Image 1 (cartoon, rainbow, N blue to C red):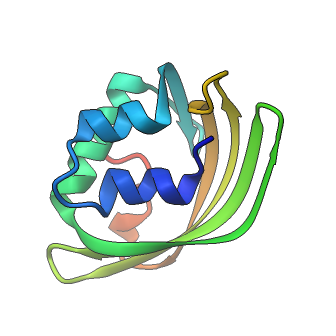
Image 2 (spheres, one colour):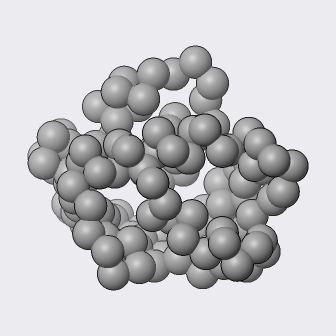
Image 3 (spheres, rainbow, N blue to C red):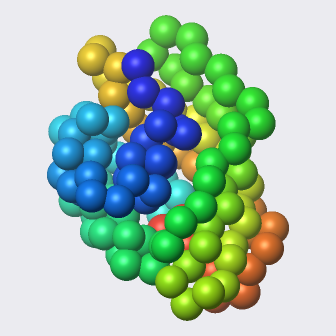
Amino acid sequence: MTDIATALTDLLLTPGLALDEALDRHFAPDYRQRTDGSWADRAEFAAHIAHLREIVAGGEVQVLEELAQGDLYADRHIVDVRKTDGSSVRMEVYVFAELAADGRFRRIEETTLLLQGADTDRDLGSAR
């Protein structure tokens, strides 16, 4: 079974890991995500992550609370990001998810809260 910290680390913080490989490890083919009210399918999510890979230089994920029961998963985590322009962003994220039978994410619904960063970073969770 995957989890948010492992998935985000593979997606954003593991140089050299191909995007398609990271996606296939953690997200089912029919994956959908809603971030702050806006839905994205797997292709749109992949475009979002490709964009973030261009602007994220490094960072870390700190899971504050996490619960998995059957095919349901929830967590609250903090993401600290160092951007390629030298600025930093800190976001708190609340996640509710459904897992596929193979343990990968099938659906994530999340809400983000900007704790530190520029106003333009508010949409970092869904920027493309």
